[in-house]
View (cartoon, rainbow, N blue to C red):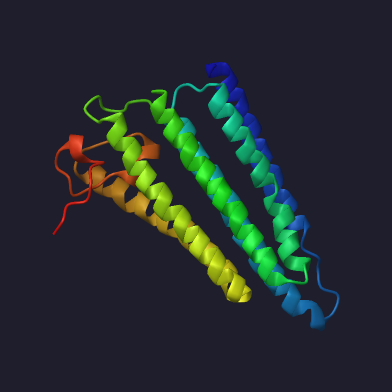
Length: 227
């Protein structure tokens, strides 16, 4: 399956590139000053959706560089997720044009929720099947899986909270969807830097879940200490 994995990764990159290109094609240039407000709003929605698609690509790439094999189940889940990512330009257009902005923004949030959830499920399945490269033998798969499940629940609950907020205040609430990608990126950077200073390495997809306050590698993914 290694060869197939490489081919599918190339296809995935192409799908993401096409989705990003379609995004900008949805923006119509203004023809007069009255349309400037709508034009600026549409650029903001484009930036939001571009960030969402890029975040999907980034997280998926971390999965792929951290694994050395795949199977039909993971490929099927990944294909479904790519299908959903292809809907992001459509949902962006939906937010631009639909009369009831609240419904459009919530629909966009629910799409983001499903994409995020599938991404986490795929990550867990990689662990279950033992496809992760260079994972220390001392780290329990069960402990690591539980840690990811905690993050999955927390992250996706926040997405639903943002969707509810966006329903009541769609013009502002839609941009709360940017919070989690930014927070996740910053956390991964800080944890990665801390682990490097401690002389420890982990597969890229696992860095987000590590606890840098643990001196023992076996406890990197254990429960939070009570203070």
